[in-house]
Image 1: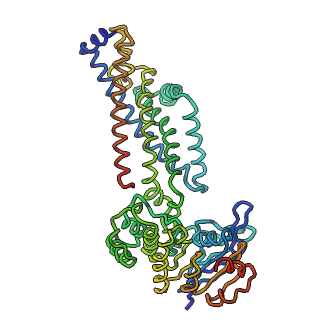
Image 2 (image 1 turned 120 degrees about the horizontal axis):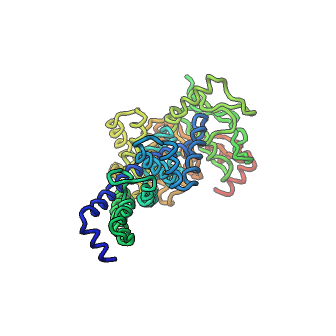
Length: 230
Length: 259
């Protein structure tokens, strides 16, 4: 098996697959994570906003969204989105990224909501008592404090997301397409060197390296945000 | 000239089945220092929090400088459309005229003291950043904390925090200040420094409504003392008469316990 690993790593074409897969995995995760964060923040704020008649339908929609996307397997969502909702030629990779983003947003929104709820309610009262609107208080006072509490949970979600994207190849992937990720690279290498354990270990180490860097970045951000605390 | 600032009529507040306020009526005039005392759970904090609508009253009327802040009939009937619209539109403007100081200070821990003070006036476009900063520094100097402008709240003592909280409210140049047990969360030796700031504020003719257990402050600084019990105002008098000749039996009992 060790020999097979060496054989893979000394073959330029196979290493090329791995590099391509790695870049695609990172790209897909990055865009999906951004989408998930934007969606997550929006949904969390809608859910936590005080009731009024215009927000009511939106709140119901957001509840439905988190229920459905947390309640069904992401693989199923991927198939439905790629082959039914966005069955547009050439749109496959984007539909997949969209699915991961929307799925991640559902989880992120709950982490953010928990973070917002953890901020002392006296903070909202103090903001409102000064005459600030709910939104001004949320953006200027509540969210900056909530973010610190949210970062570890968000980090968790981003790491899970990276590995979740490894099913992107299920909708069909060939080298050169965005859907050709690390996992797909392992599959393609198998055709040349039929030892899945060897390619699997290499790909696994690649995931591990990316996660390691992500953890480092998350820790750095958390440390920066906690500078002013005592 | 009508120097009435706040009028409250028949104010009720229910939390579920628990009726905390059972019809409060009061008129507060410019320059009044109204001290509200009473046993815990009598509704004095709820009353204060209703005035700037941190709690939504169940029914009653609140008028601030001639404008409705709240109006709802006993059977839930609302004010006419026009008044209703005005109330909804102006709630944040009303709050800008009412400063509030909390028992737990509620400073914003992620902002410097200076930012704590200037945030609202700048955000609400009441002052430019520079004006707000100048105003903040002047106010900080007044309470003896100008050296703390760039510190963060978690590094301050309780007494310092509360003085900053008062400054933060004052920076909005309110017409009336509400104090919700401002010294109850403080170490005994820090109570004095906060009461001193409040006393100076009263001397500057600020209209104040103070919920407190500090009877010394009530006697010395208050212009009107109110005794609340069981959701209503049981007695109101000048400080002298209030402490010398209490009439309500519950008030007599209350005073005998605390004095």
